[in-house]
Image 1: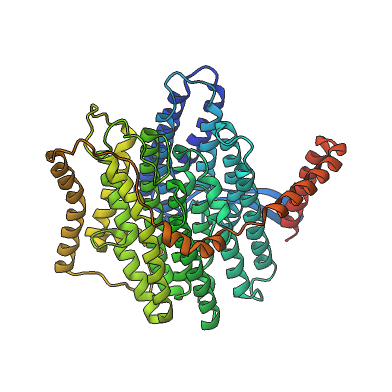
Image 2 (image 1 turned 60 degrees about the horizontal axis):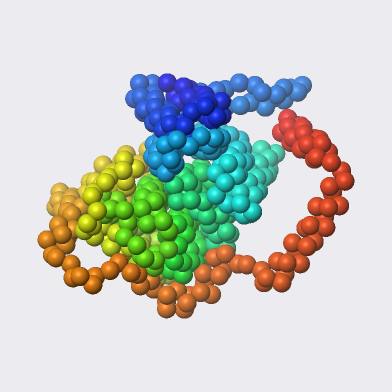
Length: 574
């Protein structure tokens, strides 16, 4: 069953390309979403039927004398959990993309083929305990996203597709380098070198400051496409941290762990400042994802025991909350036509009641309000930091305040979009997805004991976070129910109140003053060269391209094949 879960999306890629000109693109997208949903069902059935770990592929690919290079895809419990998020979340994202297209439009089968390839590439990379498979995943996902953005036609002349392709390639090179170094001398390789390489690779693909541009590039796409961005390169970066760091963190001294903590805290504060300084809903979602990923790095600085227990909780929460927010932004942008948090020049087509409930729950969880899964994730992280790096608590609280403030304006924007409307109520299927994820976050917050045991990727750990008793569970469940019921009750009270005749949904006041005050920090999250320097570099690049044009494209292709052969021989020789 699990083998079929990886084969079905590849068959879907071929089908999307073959039917692009003959079948409506919306129907192709719905079939692609159904393919991923079926793959998720097969993954779940395979785990309960056969157990874990499960070997999908394990064969010799290249043999040279006494040396051999094997291809192995072995799905273990950690990989299964992350692959389920990719498949289930990818199905929701593809459904959102399909519903955003006109019903009679054709010719966009290549878009869904590229998205399917990116998702199955990410699922393959994060699910396997074989690190070489994880190392090659960023290349596949980066190129697939390049093709998807080009096929969408939404960013003509933009460098965003190329940024994503190069980001995946650079991250893969770093991963391959540290794997080769560790394979050459497993006993003599300094653990700090492996940790630094893993952090550098994750830093690039997750777009952590000051490399935020790579994460922002994926969220320049239309909102429907941006819902899939967290399930591409960022989840691979998170998998790199969860796979490579535990075995080496135990070998680091306290000074090295403090350096890792400082890097994570700085990235968290800079990402939160970037979110405060942005008025684009998509960029705010991207920045908060970077901030939540930085918390995983902070957790790594707390030591191996805390990292093994708490980091998976932070990772799962970051993916689920970001997916709920991205789906909500896609629904709002589809109704109102823009993602500017301050622009409410026209009322949406009809009130976004269901979507607003999901966004309220997701923002509450990101802010760490009691009754949500984010509250327990933040509490367990602070407990781990208090015992190992107590000096990090103050900057973490400051960064959390900035992140919460950045989410207030989007919350108001959605709340205004759920105001009573004279237009007939219309609910699209894609708009029911955010509350489903939000309710899941609330249920996990109401029963943290069950949620923590379900998410634990490593069964044995010497660190046990605080879990509430019966009274605490009842209080958590009550807070979760309050978060779910409050938006519904307030909306009904708002409907009973007759609005004044001159009431208009004109604008939302964003925290621009604080955004301007922390503009320097936001610039550090994604440093940019002066415009004159950029112009000179562009002119230089143009001259180099003109000089290389005489060689012809076939020479570039030959160089790619030669480089590929060299990489294969290096692995075989190692």
